[in-house]
Length: 157
Image (tube, rainbow, N blue to C red; front, side):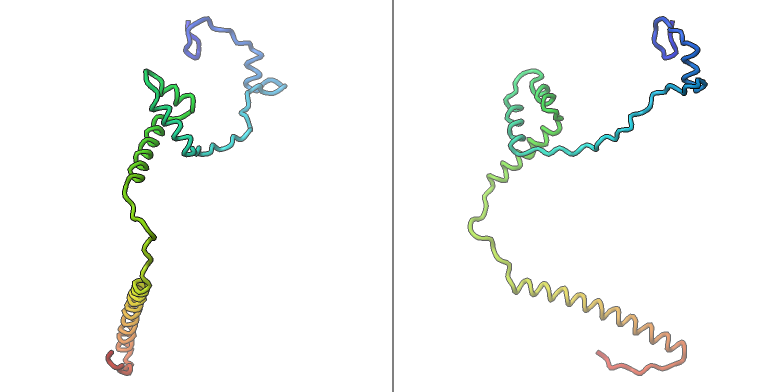
C-alpha cells in the first residue's frame, strides 16, 4: 500500500484532533512549524595565502594513487578547479621569474616628451573649441539673414 507521499508501507492513521489543530479549528491555535527567524550571515569569499597554496600544491603533486587528491581536496574543503587555477598561476610565476629582466635603474620619463604630450592635448582641445565657435557664428549669420539684419563682417583668420 502506498501512502500519500508515495512511500510504500503501512499507512498511519491521522487523528481527528491533529487535523483540527493543523487546520486552525483548534482553539489552542494551529500547530504549524514556524521558520527560523535567525538571519544567516552572508558567506565571505575565502582568501588563501601563497604559503598555503604552495603547501597544498606540494601535497597534491606528492599524492600518488587512486583517490589521494580527492581526499586531500575533501579534507581541505577545496574544489579541483581551484587546484588547476593554482597550478596555472604557479607555472606563470615560474615563467615570469625565469624571464630576463633589464638590470639597473628604470628609465626616467623625458620631461620634453611629457611637455610635448601636454601641448598636443591642449592643441586638440583648442581646435575643437574653435570648430564649435565657427558653428555658432555660422548659425548666428543664418539667423541674422532670416531676420533681415546684417552682421558686421569679421576679418578672415
